[in-house]
Length: 272
Ligand SMILES: [Zn+2]
Image (tube, rainbow, N blue to C red; front, side, top):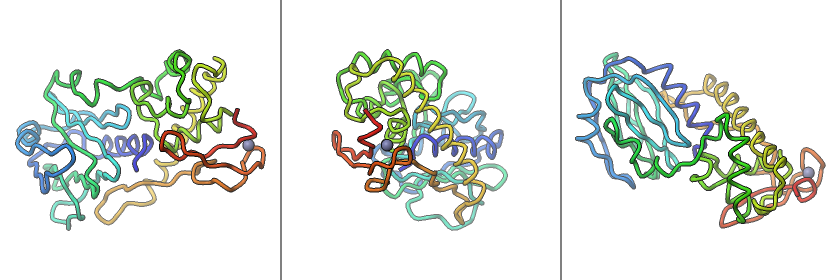
């Protein structure tokens, strides 16, 4: 499942490779996604224009033309790749945006939880997906905002981290990593964590995400699928996926627990 570092890596890749090129055609090969594609709207919004920017909001991508944007989410299995026109399509290619230089931006998504939707200028503020998003985890305000938001809530901190309305874009993997790094137990209630520890948590979130983005950038140069899509990368993680192994900090055996239906890994000795 693409997490924020993958989305940011894709954003940077697209920014380097497709800005300024005229869009000559838009084809929806298979519009049936969870939020169905609207081929007419995508085509009339994009054809004859050029992307002028690529932004990220949480795990959403916004590809801008001069008077609107394509809002995209990669869902559980979405991949955005650039491929030469005429090369074979991967299975489950839903959307194809063709550029004047003979390349195409292709959106594939076997599980179809992703989507792509054209927003005309001014529609972004009211979009139901974007409207409810909390603050950006990589923003300068996080170390002051996160403690204020979490201290006011009694839910387990792990749940607070996955609440996209508080901080947007932290997924299960990086929540576990940041809690371990900050030494905070995933079940501890937000209201029961001292402020300096919440500041440390905010800093841990930023450092794990930044390091993953850096590693992702490196990985992306090394491998690209045959259709040119960047795919997902694996980054070096300290605890996620390591239940039963020893804690890299204190050697205690890492435990696995399910909190609100999501598996999490933690160290019972150094996370309090
Ligand atoms: Zn430990």
